[in-house]
Image (tube, rainbow over all chains, first blue to last red; front, side, top):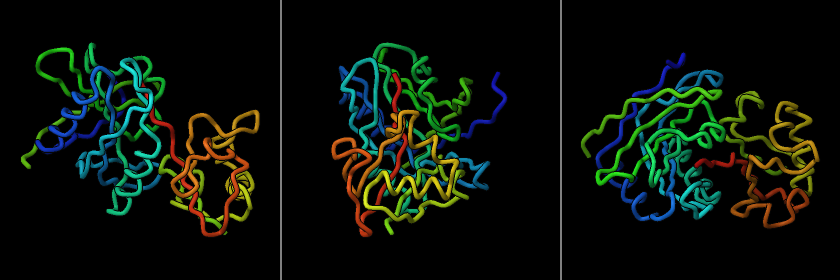
Length: 150
Length: 90
């Protein structure tokens, strides 16, 4: 068990569809993108509320079936857009084309921000599976994901 | 003075500021000015060899400085410099 709390993540059905569609469109490579939402609390304890205001599909600069790197200019655009609406980038999503929707050792070692949510979509089975996690100092905690209407 | 925009992850090293202003004619000079005022940022931006840290990307307006002149990339007071962490995994 992890020792830190993870937010309840709220995605709309439309956002979920955009994420999954982008993952399929990226095959045979991994696909990736960013999540934006409101953040509350003082700087040292800032916390995403779990509400997702926007999803930003991005180019996988690695063009790889094994790794991803969010294209820097896509990140720049998403960052500017989310800040213009008073939100922040609160996480990243990517696909696992042939494995479980669970952070790989590479995902854990590459995790940049302890506040971020790391969402993974597995395309291994006929039905895509989406799960989300917090990763802090090598420790993984799963976030519940609920789909809201819209 | 050019504007240097900081990612949320690094704002804790700059008293919470989303952006800081700095003087300099290159990105490297700007970073020297910024890290003099906010020493906690130094290790986040520059590696032990004095190069841009591989875990951050830096943009002058819309252009990645790795494809320009890296830390020698010239800047003017009208430029906005954005720092973003590299986001990757597998």
